[in-house]
Length: 310
Image (cartoon, rainbow, N blue to C red; front, side, top):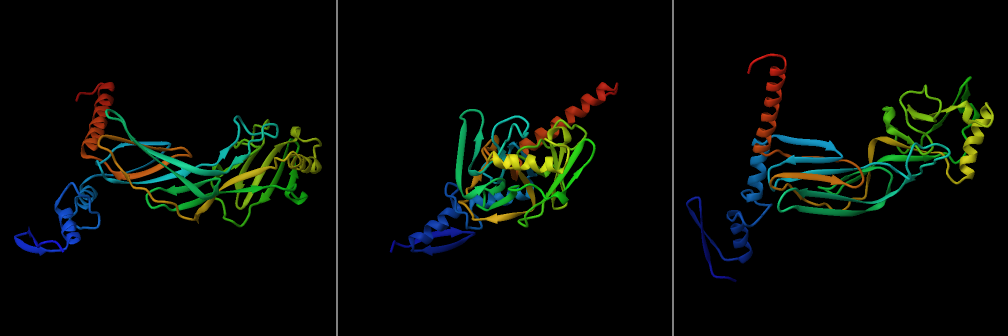
């Protein structure tokens, strides 16, 4: 047991004999010691002050850069986007199969002198084709599902017109897709909103079905048998038609190690290797003032360009 130590706080004196208790109080009063579980720690004072007075910053982009409050804890989420082999538009002659993603890395860095960079990498409990990794709390979600056509579509799910065949499959019960047509990919078909260009295969989501628009010219015979043969040929090649579609709600996966991401002094840049990032933090007053000044300058230029005076 150490000798008694006397601390004065708010005009009152306290005797503390235990070293651990004394050190915890010292952390409250010492800016050089970060004690996150104390109400009056420098860490909590910084966070509570920033939360109250500094603008909220939230952005999703391939790379996010911002002038944050230095040492403020950022909430960072990394998107795991579906990845396909090879390059170019996927077609039956250029099959681009989906790649299972085993791990992901995230980096946070400060430009200038000295340049500072901190990177973390996690190994996923199970491979993902698309997901969301919350770096701050370690949660992981599967947000994309894949569906392979291991047999040709049933004839009742095929229709034939003069210049186009339409085939569709029902997706698994793992999760219903969003209605947005952009949330579906195919390993042998180029995605398109317009279906007038019959040089390519096209596909989109309709309810819980994925529809394939196939030009008649791509079939060995202009009928349902030709459609079925196209799919069986792909299966025989070992590259069955495979779809990836975004789930309406994410499916929780086993958690991974959480990491704290603190903003640097100056411009902080955050990015990952498997897709875009979503970053939430507090914008520094200087950065916010600079942004407002830039907007004012743009307004002045616009007024002058129209013959006005400022």
